[in-house]
Image (cartoon, rainbow, N blue to C red; front, side, top):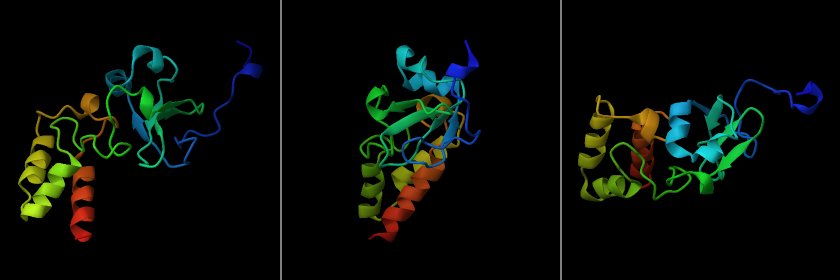
Length: 147
């Protein structure tokens, strides 16, 4: 293909073309788990996850190609607050809030411990391909501080 028709990459840092926030690198194994094959074909091997809740983009590449939330196989947290915080073990925001209402950390702590175990399969279960531990802890602390 003639180079005149190919957009050159502006940068090697992955920033969401819609909201401008930095993305998290995701690997093909993650993308294959969350995208239909036809959608996957439109992204380069170097793709990123946009974790901004108010942005409709879930994945993007350095050529500004995007995959919106509606094209992903399952609901994605934080785009959809009803989606699991932990995709491996199903912990939801409601579970964390239930812990807070009861004055315990039973569900939250159990999920964090399981997420640190070999049982976790974050690369394929999590839309970002990353462990949920930081996100679960962040959500818990944010909700706890708002009470």
